[in-house]
Image (tube, rainbow over all chains, first blue to last red; front, side):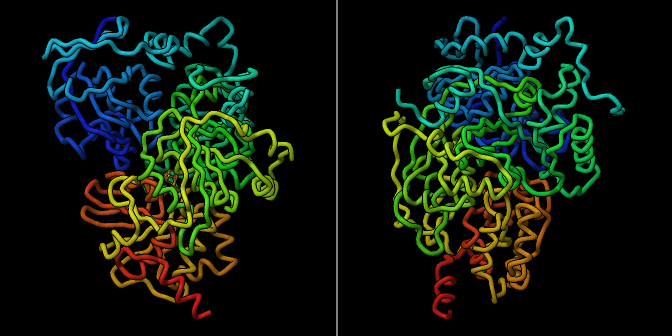
Length: 179
Length: 428
Ligand code: SF4
């Protein structure tokens, strides 16, 4: 898997799911919802984040709701990885499940807003190209690494079920109409 | 080898004799629960792509609670997808507009000790009060769970919270949790909290679910309470089946290893209020007393069960809320509404000036009736006060117990409920 590169968007502790995917915008399409990402703390973020950029945060990133849109919105905006001192469990799983790597790393004093970062998951390395520093990052458990490489949980489930015979299971019982 | 309760549950669900914290295991799920926001509308296309159907429709519970009743065409469409999914996939345990999912589960006997419950909602922890490993998952994880009946997990460490002493008048399980959010912090990710001690033993199941519900605010996977006679009696009274042996089987061994033990003396606790925008911003009610409010909200899975409505009624009965303040009450389920109508609770609330809303997540989720405008201030019996959660991002939400919310509605400012309860006692 190739390395990811992009600019750092740095936030503090306790960035919660209501900031990432506000309730008042939850009925909108994924693209429209994504435009509200983090607007309560940084109105510039959604408009200016570029594909490849990384979200960098302090402790407890993603605390709060189970809403997967918190992770999906970041991916929709092109964010290539999330890096935080610590992650809320459901948000961490959600990121991994949609193929957005979540890396536990304390950015304090090491990553500043706008720094260019390079994340090489396979090698387990994070580099700050602005300062020339490189750090090892903890290896992901093998099943998560495989899942990320496959593109997320749906992709790995598809690989698992797209075997001969799988198509014999109907998506829903007979007689159901749903057009 | 001595094991904690969660280790015993996970060993059983993983088909192993023992497990240890840090082990990555695949566990069988006993019950999958989802609501209208996180469930069918997110599962349907994915399940169709996979072609698996549901692994076991009888182990799936679906609840419409987030977008009820529909307020616009979009929410109506979400509810429609939910209904059609339940019908087409043969989900018999479908509760359409009957109440909030976490309250619906124990109300209908779905929860019992030792189970693994996966829910598409962060407060799935609520069912942990029954000695079940009940944890929240996002929509893709839930899709995989309803397709396969299993999921991976890392066996968590346990933090034991021992609560001694008796709660004083006007002090509740909610106040315990707000104090714990402050004292323990909200960062217990990938850990479980296990509550115990004389104060917990003395609580009824509604009080205990407040502890497990807000384990989510501590960041924990779930909030466990070992079952006792109170647990079994509650399950049986709600149509569930449970063996007496559950009490011996589903508890931590006396010499089990905890990551940490925290002791709290409930008798020393005052009512707590959490200031905007975090449950961890809590302090004794006196610190915030006098702060202006526009709205008082009694609602949510954590704060609008029958016992919660009764607390509010104990403060409000025979009194009127302050002019210029609105008090909204959204009972947690239709059964709660029916019971509150029968015992006079509803009458006390309405006569004091409360507006009764539909049972559902409503303003708590920022989706339904009772939202806030920019600059408005609310005190709420819900569990979360993150910025933007209950309406405009520039609104402010304080959290308190139903007693404290009711007292604040009477005064039009944040108020200590204890004087209202005392005068009542003196007059009686
Ligand atoms: S009432 Fe609030 S906390 Fe409870 S399930 Fe609904 S949105 Fe979540």
